[in-house]
Length: 200
Image (cartoon, rainbow, N blue to C red; front, side, top):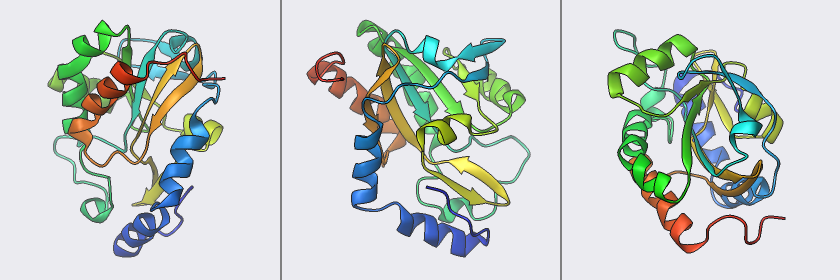
């Protein structure tokens, strides 16, 4: 779903109201079993990464709104938009748990609509060891119907994480209420219900 008002306070209120209760459950449930689309995105590892091919093997993809850019203000109304903050702590947490995820055979990818140069700067500054993918046209959102919001005349992803295997989504986490605990949630699911059992 996409929010269309651009006033900061009004936008934040509408985004919050729009993604509550059953809408959250339906978003996560609807994604399970979907095929990962064949989109090519700029990667901080260099060149382009084709997402469907990358998810042939077990992969955790965390989709986030935007990390801060040194010297630049946050988008209008950012602090009032539910779920907008927390991108840096989430990325640091995945960085710190990347070896534990690898023990389950899982790779990690981060994805946002930020330009590739902003992602490269962030990856270098925070020592992110896995690729961050730039999707400025929100191709993945349009292909899978992922939730987004508008503020400051820009469209952003809402925070969502999915686990894919053999190019199919096996699990989706939405909403992600505690970004820095998200890797622990993924690890708990991998330990209890690894992919391959019930994905059609």
